[in-house]
Length: 100
Image 1 (cartoon, rainbow, N blue to C red):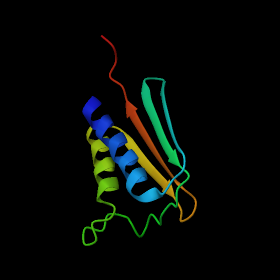
Image 2 (cartoon, one colour; image 1 turned 90 degrees about the vertical axis):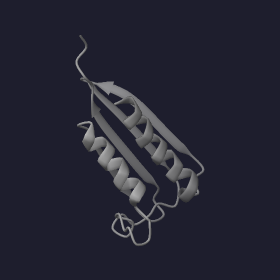
Image 3 (cartoon, rainbow, N blue to C red; image 1 turned 45 degrees about the vertical axis):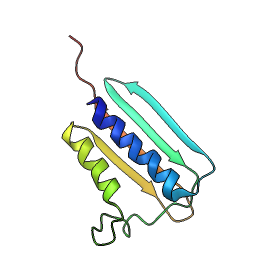
């Protein structure tokens, strides 16, 4: 669980560093009702989600696809919201195991 969450956050931050040309990145982490909530938001150039939606021919979108797959494997979810010129927001939600 920890490694999957770490890798998903790492991918989101790497995407900002490589592609966004952002000046500011906001990372929020909270636990709400046994759900880990992580939001990564930047003020970068954004992108068209349909254009980058996992095209293996161009190699674009594979990091986002991997992030979605990692979250699904651990029972979580990820959403990416972006638009050209409007920055990007990645939201990760992961149910936490009950404490013994």
